[in-house]
Length: 442
Image 1 (cartoon, rainbow, N blue to C red):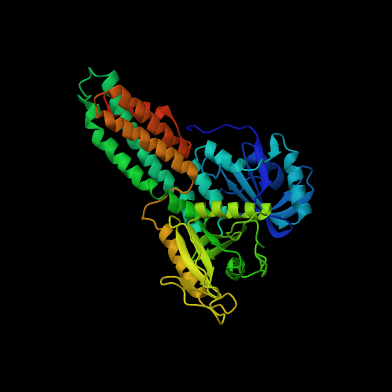
Image 2 (image 1 turned 45 degrees about the horizontal axis):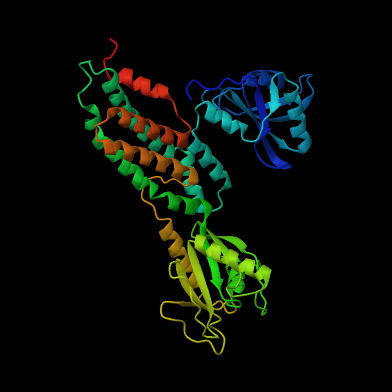
């Protein structure tokens, strides 16, 4: 969105979290920023330098003494004039500051997400950077932090903008061939000449799409389901992995009815572990629903830990189509048998084998989240629009220059789908290239 958005309101909000606190940071953005600084702190300080000032109501009554920073637009977070007040974090102090701001004409408290929305609308961020910033704030593991920071700093935006530029150039050449075919500087049979570039773009996007699941695993977590017969030791393992009692452990079969979920941090990755109902035939309605939910969770899992009791020697069947790691439990009991070849053996009572199991889990999640050196997408929204872009490019490639009008339409669809990811869909870009790359109109 070129040119920015002109909003006549000035917004303000607390940006530093809950009160009370040692320091509170209040932020404002909008055309009234300089007026507020003139009225409350005696004028705007030098841009991007902290200045210690006394903050006062418009009637001169002091509110607090703190650091003031001024960020003139467009070189600010939102693209507008912005300021920050770093003050003492008492509730009454912050309330007094907000009371003084609200008394100024054109000032209002910010709605949730309004600062970042203005940054997007004023061209300071695209949607992938907005999503990355949100993920960075919510990140709980090291890999989540790294991926979110990569997106927030424009990793995806740079890649998608480069693809968009190439698409725009392809479209511009085809449009020129259609509309200005009598001009000397427009090459003949240009749609056919661009087929190689269209194919290259399609292959690059296809390779990029293969990283979507890895990005989703990093962002949302690697899903592990504990499954097996009743009393196979699922809840005991769940508690051992979580380091606390999250599942009820009982000798009575069928204790776990609903799915119990915990999220672990393994080697910097989020691993979502689900304890499920024991798999058996039952006529009891609630337990049967638990079994149904367990089976559904298994189908959606990245890895199923198939637990079986070594003290009984039972080897229940498990769908071989699922990603399964077999784990024999209760290996410390006197009558425990050796696990099958390739299976793990653990005891949650003694801790035997748990370190080996954790190593296997770390290997599985690291392999699932393996990525190349390129940036990777991380959301279903990214996947959907990339698939639409690829489909449109493949459709354009099928014509191989034989029908420039259809090629141009498919490229338009591809550009639109790609632009939906970043939130930047602008036909002016096409016109710039059409009239900038050729001598048309001179």
